[in-house]
Image 1 (cartoon, one colour):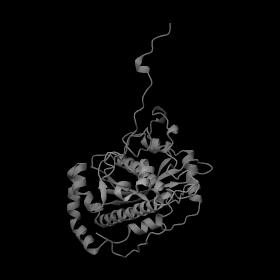
Image 2 (spheres, rainbow, N blue to C red):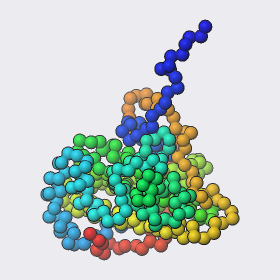
Image 3 (cartoon, rainbow, N blue to C red):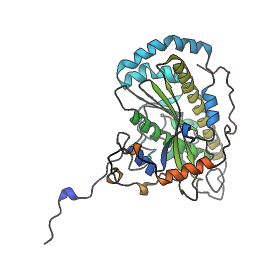
Image 4 (cartoon, rainbow, N blue to C red):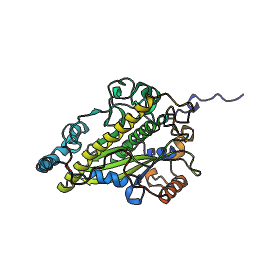
Length: 362
């Protein structure tokens, strides 16, 4: 007689993975998402344009005001909680929130994959849902509408994210959270960019249009997220989260430089999302083309759910974390292909180039 099956041996349900999971970066790698650094040559094609925009000076009056506030800024960092950071510290860094923004909303309508917990950025900005054509919202809902519960109020098509952690919290968690949000934002803007484009294949221009910022222990880090096209060696798009720069805000000169960069970044992200929303709206008002391309309805390649391994299969043999392991051959192949191609290093079409020396807003 066969032994009775122990109920504890029934099919194991793997819980969704979140950024506090030590294997989370490996999960992202398994879903074609990679962290990189501009220092190692892994850059979006519009990297020089981004750097140029980050350095555009703000108004002299603002810089004088910030310089006088630096000591008070340092003291406010010792409050010990994330909530007080967002109340007292982050507004100094990124400026006043005048646009369409939200905090701590679960992105349950814009999931990375079923095996990932929902992204929940500390802060994000997008466009007002009413500014997006109804047909675009309907078609690209899963790509550009983070939550349907407040779908008519919360920002849509977000592409600027800010993650902050109190001094006692983890830098790596903030990095993972910034990466997740950046990938979702980049995927959404890529869908808008390709909405009813009329070409047979999606456009992959190699430019970054989505940005994430983290702030932990006085260190401000800026990331740019972009996609690379599938190739003969890699049959899916790759999502690349590139660290653009870091600023130690306890130092006054770096504080002024970092605040300038962060505020300029918000302006740039706003320009990008409004550009793609306006273009998608314009195409939505025209009759759909008879030839339906693979991305006419926004169904661009998703993150591959079937390739996701079980949690047990992600533990390293030597006990080291995934962050310290060697990159896979897929990543090496992608890196060689990316570095080997010619770079345009140009600003995106139809965006005004802002020259250094021109005073920006506060």
